[in-house]
Length: 481
Image (cartoon, rainbow, N blue to C red; front, side, top):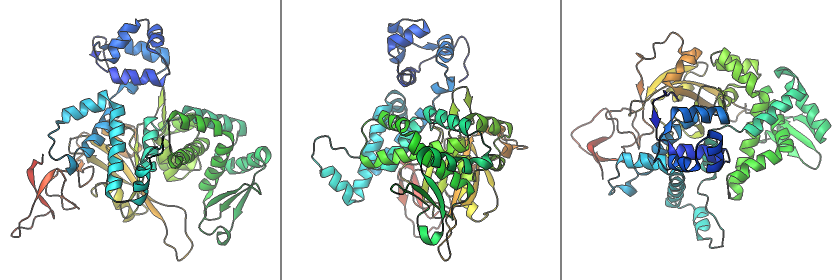
């Protein structure tokens, strides 16, 4: 975050969150910064500014990146609140946007609670029997988790998709193995056999059937389907080692999340084991250095680290180590029906939690050009511009006559970071025309969009049997209250 010696900033809530993440009291951080605890209290209540000198001292004393005080999280929280309060449920409430911004900045905990409450409401509205059963549970201490997948996604984003304990454990493992990317699978197999008495076996598809990986606890065998490619096999072995050797670290991270029901707790553990596996295949320091040197060329990185396109893209979103950060990417994975199965916003891109994505984003076009990497400058209704690349991936293959699974991977960043990418070389990013997209149709208020699937829920639908417009839906200019 750029600043000058005379600039004063009111960033109390963000300052408080950083202090809490460091595990320090107001008195402790005051001692470290050489100021009084009462001044820290005033800073966190936004009654005193944070000067540039204090910011620099904070960064030097606690080895922090000043970008931790940037507004990325608040922008994401605001986008999520805006989506929630655009629901017709709140049609009669004239809620100014500035109040939503204030809430996102000053009360992130309230924002998160509203997200969970709205998610529970949408699930209940769909009439799911499981929701009804959980809500009817009157046992003391019973908790309602509306959507375990969204809950875990929230936890990943709350940690900025970076877990230093797992990064360090993965780097230690690679240092012990001391092998190249091509030799990793064999080395991991030996590790499992010699340290954990687990034998790795590649099994025929007619034996594994619909299963790609299975750990037989009784026979101490890790069975992997022959359909899994080389990078996938190494990943599965690393994941198994993570569950065996990093269980305590994973449990500590899970426990920091507070009370969780069994389903999100299990999902979080699996997600963290996957994180460790990717960190083993692509250790932080060499991967970050290679990404910077190669200008984030995904295909070359995949070749160098013997990884898949999707694996590299996902790994790029985790480069959040203080003083060694990469480009803050966002990532999306969709199928050819538009269903989103993976997303990470890096705190900058306002993905919708309760809907799909804009069809004008060319991530959907990759299914028509399966062997091409597409690039695009996109622009949201508020004028924010992003640069993105997209490519279709197949994983893993399926035996005939089953359909071959295909997904589209979209990877992007704010336009100001695009100059670091090989894909933007030769482009005049300032003059490049951005494709106007929306978060999704239900929240987008752009008029005359031929791809619109439904009218915005914030506008009144206009029906005229005598007129046919480019868009299938016409709506009023006035926002509904």
